[in-house]
Amino acid sequence: MKQYSRLIKQKRKELGLTQKELARIVHTSQQAIARYETQKAEPSLEVLQALSEALGAPLSYFIDSDTSGTEYDYIVLYRSLAANNKKQALEFMKLLKRQEIEQDKFKKDIRLSRNDE
Image (cartoon, rainbow, N blue to C red; front, side, top):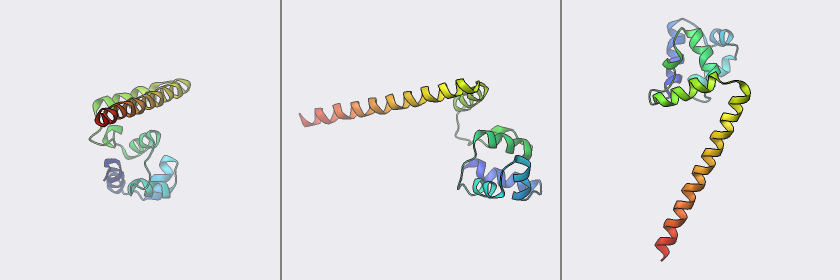
């Protein structure tokens, strides 16, 4: 179970809130809260921030324990960017990922061609 899923439900119950009450506080639907608690949907970082405020827990409380410090730094830095820079950062990351996939494919093709020799 993802950490955020269990912790949202746990903190909500500790505070004596229903899913509907929590949903009203964070400006979402009861169905969305239910989906987060059952891992049928993953909350965005903005929703996690709203949940952390509503439930009185730091954002880091909801981030999976296997998230490294570097990943957390990326999240914090990304959130601090202006909207147009967020878009550019995302496009750059997509480009890097495409390059990585192509490099892996190229390396695999070279290995296969060497095995054919």
